[in-house]
Length: 430
Image (cartoon, rainbow, N blue to C red; front, side):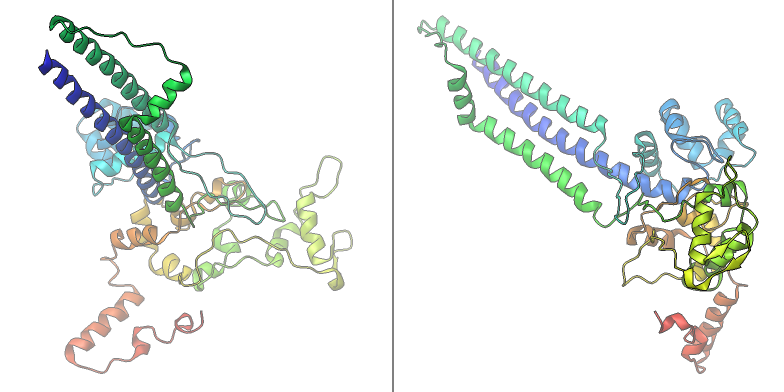
C-alpha cells in the first residue's frame, strides 16, 4: 500500500508538470504558428484569395475549416500533380476558377500547416481611426485560450482527486496497523483558503501559471510592436479603389505614375482626377453633384456650372499616408515594379492580369477604402529577397550592367561607381 501511495504522489507531480508544459506549448506555439502563417499567406496566397470573401479563388476561412488537412497539404503544394494522380476531390476543386492555382513545391508541411492555422482563425474586421495606427490584434486564438483553461481545470481536478485518494489510502493503512485516525475537523472557508495559500505546491503552480500567461501576452505584444497591418485611416475624400481599380479597371499607374519611374509611387494631383470628373459627376437622385466629387471641385476652386477655376479658393487635399516605412529604410518602387516585376510575380503568385502592386499592397481592386495589407517588416522583405528567383534576368539592362561589371573585375579592367549605378539620384538624394 505504501508503494501505491508513493506511486500516486509521483503521478500527481508528473500531472502538474505536464499541465504547465502543455500550457506553455499551446499558448506560445499556437501564436507562433498563426504569425508565421499570416506572413506566408500574405506573400503566397493573398493575391488570389481572401479570408472572408471569394476572389480569384474561394474564401479561405470557410474552406480551411471544411476540408481535411490531408487533402489541403498536397493541394497547396502542387495541385496540378494532385489532379494528375486522379484525385477526384482535386479535380472537382479545380473547376472553381479557370485560372490555374500556383504550385508551391518549396513549402514544407509545417509551413503549409501554419497557413492553414492562420486561415482558420482569420483576423478581426478592420476599423478606421483618424490619423492613428490601428494594428490588428493577433493575440491568442479563442480556441487556444479555451484549451489552456481546460488543461488547467483538469489538472486542478486531478490534483484534488489524487490528494483525496492518497489521504484515504494512508488512513486505511494506518487503521490496518491499529493506529487510531482522527477525523479532520470542519474548518471555515477563510481558514481553508489561508491554508491553501500556505501550501507551497499550490502557490508555485499559481505563480507559474501567472508567469506563463503574462509572459505569453507580453511576448505577443512586443512581437506586434510597430507592425501596422490593417492600418486604415479615415481619408478626407472617400475614394473607392474597388470602384476605380476594380469595377472601372483603371490601371494603378494611371494615378500613381511615380511607381514606374521613381522611388515613390506618388499621390495623384487633383488634375488627374479632373481628367474624368470634369464630366463624370455621379449626381444624386435630386440632381446634386456627389458630395465626394464636390470636395475635389472645392479644393480646386472649380465651378462646374461655368467650368472655370478660382485660384483664390484653391487648397490642398490632406490625404493621410497609409504605408509608412522607418526613416532608415530605403525602398524604390521603380526597381521593384519594373526591374523585379517578373521575379515578384512568380514569387507572390500574382495573376498575369493583375498588377504587380498586389504583391505588397494586396488586392487593392477589392478595397472600398485602402488599408495596409502587408506587415512591411524587415523579416517580410528579407523572406521575399531570399526566395525570389532572378536567374532569368540576364537580358535585363540592370542585371546586364552588373554582369558586365563583374566581367571587368575578372579581367582587372577599370570599374567606376557609375557603371554600378552610382549616378542614380536615389544614391545621394534620399
